[in-house]
Amino acid sequence: MAGRVLRRIVSTAAAAVMPAAVIAGPASAQYADVQVVQLAAGYGHTCGVGSDSRTFCWGRGAEGQLGNDRTTYRSAPVAVTAPAGVSFTQLTAGQSYTCGVGSDTRTYCWGSNDSGQLGDGGTANRSVPAAVDTPAGVGLTQLTSGDRHTCGLGSDSRTYCWGLGTDGQLGDGGTANRSAPVAVSTPAGVRLTQLDARNSHTCGMGSDSTVYCWGYNGNGQLGDGSFTNRSTPVPVNTPPGVSFTQFAVGGYHTCGLGSDTKAYCWGLGETGQAGNGGTANRSSMAAVTTPSGVSFTQLTAGSNHTCALGSDTRIYCWGYNRYGQVGDGSATDRLIPVPVDTPPGVSLTRLAHGWHHTCGLGSDTRTYCWGLNETSQLGDGGTTDRSTPMAVSPFPSPTGLQPPSGVTAMAGDQQMTVYWTAPSDLGDGTLTGYTATTSPGGQSCTTTATMCTITGLTNGTSYTVAVVAGTTTGPSAASNPSAPQTPAPPPVGPQSPTGVTVTDGQQITVSWTAPSDLGDGTLTGYTATTWPGGQSCTTTATTCTIGGLTNGAAYRITVTAATTSGTSTIVNHYAGPPSRI
Image 1: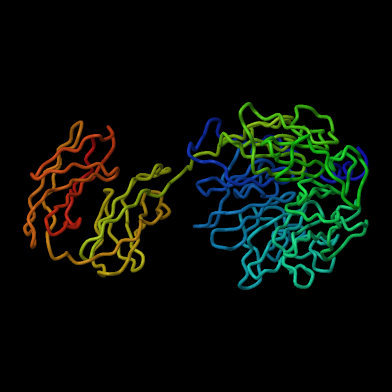
Image 2: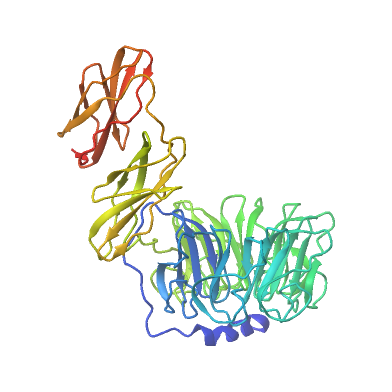
């Protein structure tokens, strides 16, 4: 290999030394209901957000880029140690670091920080997420990362970048490194709405439908017809009458989807990453040679290869293929798009590119990666390069002390009765009890059962309740809160049945005492209902049997009385231990 590709490999060789052993993840751990919903790939690591809002990373960890408070490599996903109460909604990965937008609207970064790319005002590496020092009152929405610089769209309609600035990639008009976000000098009246970055250049979609690029331009990747670096955004020279709907930034090349349904690439072309059948560098764009009858709907680019989602639902890749990152089963560079050899019956969406590896979300709910695997960035449990997509090891189940779940509250007169399900894992401790607490107000009740009643509440005020489990090794995190409930005085009219009892068996037989007052009506019947599940029986007597239940499950039962003037509220209920059939 010559030119930029060879220099790129040499420049990272010292940073890619493997430790004596790679720590493998659990061999068969699986969290059955979790699907990966978003991916981000760096040089030697990959990260994903799960459908349960947890974030995992795998691969190289020497600089802390996995976010698990360690600096070891991992060959299977490990959980990121997110700040308490924070989940990540969008990720981006640089060469040896990761950033994410938090559910608290703050931006966090972790990993290598030698050029200030974490944006926390310093240059020390971080092995757990640290908050970015954004301007006061500004939140960042979409993030993107190059080698050692990061950019984001601000809630104030401005674009901010930070980190390495030596080639002008921060877009602030200078070439200094920045350890905290600085505003990009966008053209007057233009707001950027989409960003992408790689290595040392950045591009953005303008509100005027023009694509702007800035930073390193030694191979023409800025698309302005020159080979001159730019420290502020310059417009890309598109073909006459063509605007771009989406673009992707590679290591030293850039590609875009045109309004004429064609794909275009420009910049470095020596390994075929421009997809036009040649290997020449270009400072102006050339159309990609797409397969007959196929148009591209999504683009993504690695250091020296490019991939696209086709209108036929297939994935196509082209360019540098030494490590199998094109995914066609070979190690031969491809000068035009070739289809990725996906598993039978699986289509891929939501692509993410590392420097020399590619990942995608499968239609079978699995995540697949292929290409370079020397630091376990493919997440398949090993370090062997793969020339076709391989499934990433499943995200592991939560471990250690977990909070209670399924919290439900029932409001009464100045009180709420709360029910929940015990934690799925108590860690290394044993249960000492539970505390259920309202918000607002902080009123609480404690118990060793899985229900209790909180008193002293204000009628007419809406409350939610969260539950904490206490153990011999400490308390759990708070559960997700219950749905809001509002205490109220007993209604004028029928009162609730009292003295509810149950008899266990293959079904539940419920008995109760008739209401002390039916108000202005006459009795029409009773309904006894289980929680959870909502199975019920109705009768005009004071006993009935509820069938259709699940063996081994625990249930609680409430009974309401219906009259010609209305229905009683759920005030009295079976309050003993759960009935288990």
